[in-house]
Image 1 (cartoon, rainbow, N blue to C red):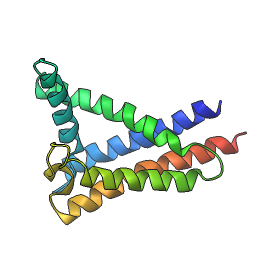
Image 2 (spheres, one colour; image 1 turned 180 degrees about the horizontal axis):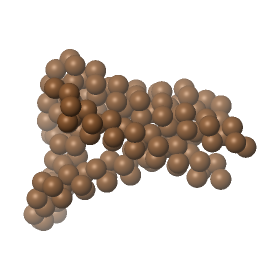
Image 3 (cartoon, helix red, strand yellow; image 1 turned 45 degrees about the vertical axis):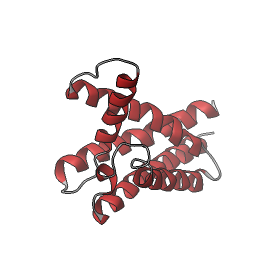
Image 4 (cartoon, rainbow, N blue to C red; image 1 turned 180 degrees about the vertical axis):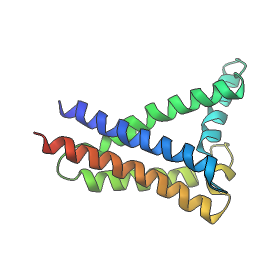
Length: 145
């Protein structure tokens, strides 16, 4: 049962992160564009497999689905009970730093997550928020036991 609660908390963190990303990119100048990184990664993988990537709208939906799944699993590591807050904060901070530092070396471009200092700060903050939401939900679910 603890695994299901951890997965539920991870899903909550991932959904909040994606909702914040999507809302921010539509409303804030210089917002992070992590969706573009996901789309580029999927397109690169498909091209490497000899397949033609789909149109941007389908590619975007694929990237969003991949983000929800991968971030859910990642944030579920925050778990439940004692230490969930610290684990969630560390996971969120680590994801935020990784989102700023890794896209360039991975060949996905730096601009979507770090084109301005504001973009970097928003990128870090969005991932931290996801980790904290996962921790909050994990903490609440553990208190039900």
